[in-house]
Image 1 (cartoon, helix red, strand yellow):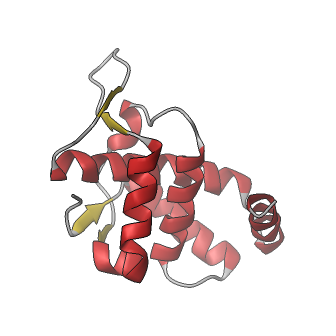
Image 2 (spheres, rainbow, N blue to C red):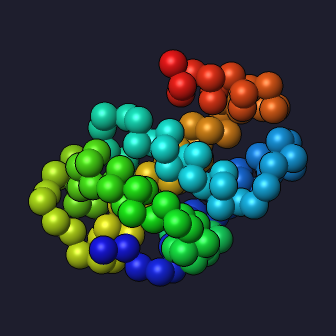
Image 3 (spheres, helix red, strand yellow):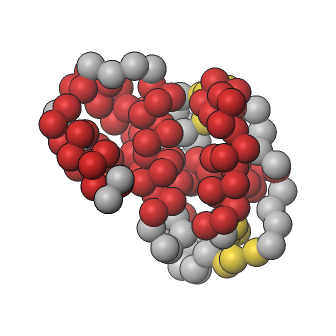
Length: 135
């Protein structure tokens, strides 16, 4: 359903690296996971601008580890959308190809990274975000 190679945007890559330094947290893939879950919170699908895949590459087993099926299920539960064309809205579908599903996952990570980067400036902000998610 999702390829083993997942490449996010250069902008997301830069933001992940900044957050890693700011927060003094573990590997970049843990930040990418947080970004994904933040994006999946939104009801509307990612727009065209979030589909860029010109940055860092992750191996899917490293990115999701033993929780691969959980992250995949969350993506499907939120709904699958075809990548929109210029001046179009995303279209919800029942099934996407492996490549399309991977691009959709990347779009969520890219969108979530922008959201995460703007909300979290230090470890206290991260703790506040975690508390909000657990309410």
